[in-house]
Amino acid sequence: MILDETYWQERYENDTAAWDLGHASRPLKTFIDNLEDKGIAILLPGAGYGHEALYLYSQGFTNVTVVDVASASLKHLASKLPTDHGYSLLHQDFFAHTGLYDLILEQTFYCALELRFRESYFKHMHRLLNKHGMLAGLLFHFEQKKPGPPFTCTPEEYKRMAQRYFTIRLLEPCTISEPSRAGKELFLQLQKQADGD
Image 1 (tube, rainbow, N blue to C red):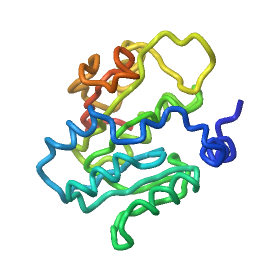
Image 2: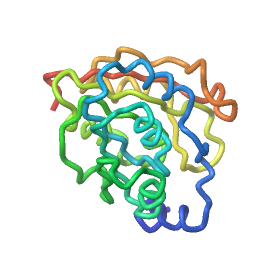
Image 3: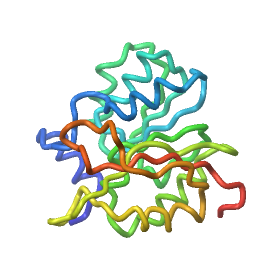
């Protein structure tokens, strides 16, 4: 299975995005609610229908970029935002994206990547963050009984890959997950290390 643009585009076009909650997830809403600076540069990679982007807009955040390989998901998001939203909605491969951000929000993006991109994910996240920038959000952690996506791995494996580039501020079971994901998620907060590659 090749998880390329065609694969994801077809999932949205055929309305088979089973991972979609239909709203911003409770853990990320709670995290966003505790952010004080509404002008920080925020990236949402692989944001799907962009429920978190809509929530950020509703809370007054002004500097948000959404990157997704599927144009169908971006069109859906654009249709939900006011025409003068000012957000950047980019139809692009995450690994080709350049820019600098204060915060990157993770929500079901890592779990959608082919296994060969696991190490590259953390390396590219590091590149995209400003000094002392943060990667925060949710990672799946459950026993994988069938081939993904979604893909998951152990907390130990997440730590091994992340700690080369980040200081791990938090990586623990999420206690306020949506009911359908209860017991299956870890919440992470990783701060960029100045000396990562």
